[in-house]
Amino acid sequence: MYIGAIEAGGTKFVIAILDEQGNIVERKSFPTTSPAETFQNIYQVLDAYELKAIGVGSFGPIDVDKNSSTYGYITSTPKLKWRNTDFLGPLKERYQLPISWTTDVNASVIGEYHYGAGQNTQHCVYFTIGTGVGAGIVVNDQLLTYNYHPEVGHLMAKRHPQDMEFAGICPSHGDCIEGLISGPAIQARWGKPAEELVNQAQVWEIEAYYLAQLIYNLQLVLRTERFILGGGVMHVPGLINQVCDQVKKLNYDYIEMGDLNQLIVLPELGDNAAIMGCYYQAKQLLMN
Image (cartoon, rainbow, N blue to C red):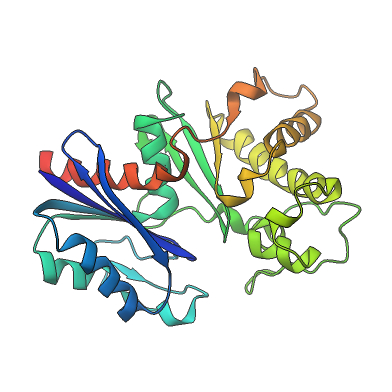
């Protein structure tokens, strides 16, 4: 038995084939281009296997309301070629299989919760800080979702005193969290991509300052057991330690947070968190 997993990212797609035990037997990635070209690349991988189910985790916003006429669509995305695109429909028509559908960051939290850094908890949050900023949230062993998905990247933050001039890049909100700390925001503010700024201390002080506010605000509401920080920006060495330091300053011993190095961690599944979440959700469809 094989299960297909599709991580549809704003910058790249990852397509994987997994066996019944969750071992990845094939994994391919390619840039996110037009829907037509991208679907052909997806088909090229999936067609080679006899699949039992497919799991999809997609960049968004997406419609997850099964009663909606646009269920399975990517909706008001800033990626104009993908706006109002029926993602699920072509897959269902081609493969006639059970297909799970959620956001890419929800897929990541599901993967880490069941197979990675979120194991042995009842509550955890997975952040992705990359092309955008998003969160998948598990509360009482259940994914926090209804007919929507959390948009925590668009919460607002107190501005860093050394970062008052940067307007932010979010087309909807300007200087929301995503507009301030995403990979494209780093590029816009400093004129270079994150990987070329690793040794620039001020860059990461500002990044940690905003990310810590996001974490702390959610902790005041959720009291979660673990924050898992993923996405390309978190590959910067030492950034997670700066985030922990900033969270400690924000809290000032107000609520009990325990060992911050246990509360705030990096993913254990690396770049396969969403793939494993897609696998888990697709496999659940076969068991129900």
